[in-house]
Length: 237
Ligand SMILES: Nc1ncnc2c1ncn2[C@@H]1O[C@H](COP(=O)(O)OP(=O)(O)OP(=O)(O)O)[C@@H](O)[C@H]1O
Ligand SMILES: [Mg+2]
Image 1 (tube, rainbow, N blue to C red):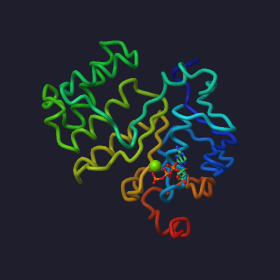
Image 2 (cartoon, helix red, strand yellow):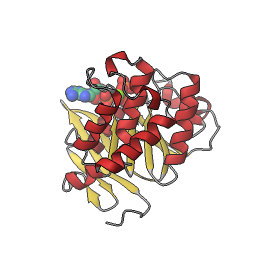
Image 3 (tube, rainbow, N blue to C red):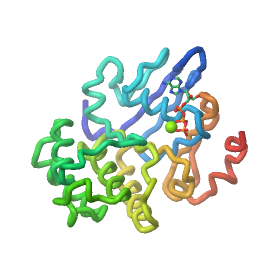
């Protein structure tokens, strides 16, 4: 596959059933490079959808294609192009941040030199470089969260999925995060699931809204608009 081709994620007719309840009900959408906000009330199916895309769960029906790659049939290749920050991310407290990131890079098969370059770039950007040799046990919540974002980006993935990435970030860090994502999304697909609408209003180009497992909104978003004003009806449930 050409590495520099514009990315496209195609989700087709995905259904996931838990005990007869359709957590995802025939969900289909296509998204390309740019930032997509994945929204919906508690229990709407966001995490289920993300878990399906990243291959943590099997769905009952439907497919996830990243360009030509099918996440069920070519999971290894698919994962090579995927970066993921789960809502709850575990760390190795006794590792230093640098050791942790190098370890994650090795797990992801990122060549060492490339990995070190990416680590320095993003640790500098997210103001962690000077803290690289500190043990993670000494990191604050916000610092750990930034480390989680960096581990998701080590392979500079074509598809970057971040579940609640701004939890615990202060005002300044949120700004840095937004700028970084805006830049990264020029050539990559970035999906951000969040309940903090203000964090995506200025950067999202697309909005997906799930409601009780159904995709009820899939449209271009005019940056700077108010999500709650535009989509209030979906959040009043
Ligand atoms: N492993 C599971 N077994 C049974 N039901 C599940 C399981 N995981 C999720 N569900 C159900 O599927 C539905 C969707 O859950 P999901 O976690 O995807 O929602 P969400 O949109 O991520 O919500 P939140 O905003 O609270 O994180 C919910 O009704 C949930 O109870
Ligand atoms: Mg969730």
